[in-house]
Image 1 (tube, rainbow, N blue to C red):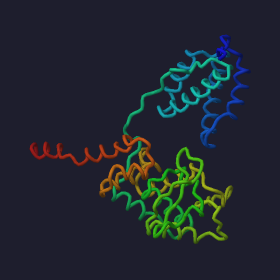
Image 2 (tube, helix red, strand yellow):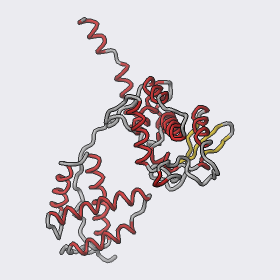
Image 3 (cartoon, rainbow, N blue to C red):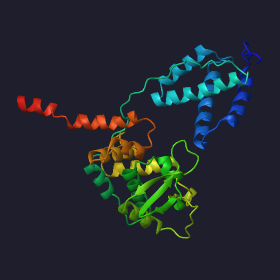
Length: 308
């Protein structure tokens, strides 16, 4: 077997630029993954240009990481760094450029949730606050019902088509394309109230076909087009604010946390919640269980009763 020889002389920025273009074609993943990696690598190029760096080294990767720390959230820093790690691993494999990002550590993330869930009373208030006399109200109500009862992510809601709403035995289910999946192979059980909400919304539309998006935009510039994940997140956020829940820690992702917590509080096992949320590692799901255990503890109440 011939020995792999890595160039010791780093190419000029123009060569890296060409490599970036080739790498984009090499990336395997969803359209969103490609977009994320492409955006991340372009940001690194801009930073190199601003710093007048033509031959980046490992120290430059670390400096770039530290620069990101000053203006980005830890999750964003790690996402950008991951893109660089994948890129430079590829350049080394292709004998284009050394893997200068290898072993560069990202930021340590907290295992706690970065968004808050809603209590059962708050969730009911949110649903009750939505005016369902308009098509957009019916749509937003249906979306929130889905996310609250199934734990679906905004990307999963966004990808859903009308034809994904199907019947299995006596159950109504919604097939969905999960995170990192290429097709709609899994399904969520849809309860009767949620099905009624979705059907009520669909009745506001005409000439329905199975290939059409389940939820569409009503904006003039893209009316009838599939909602974007940003539009779904904005719609949920606006409904939260209108219901009186105006906090940076309450977002569309809070509905997913609410689904998990509500399920556990009402007798679901940790394994059932893990399956509902599509968590590969049950330790991720256990975070919800730990939170509930803390809430149920009477330690503070006992101390308060003794003191007051």
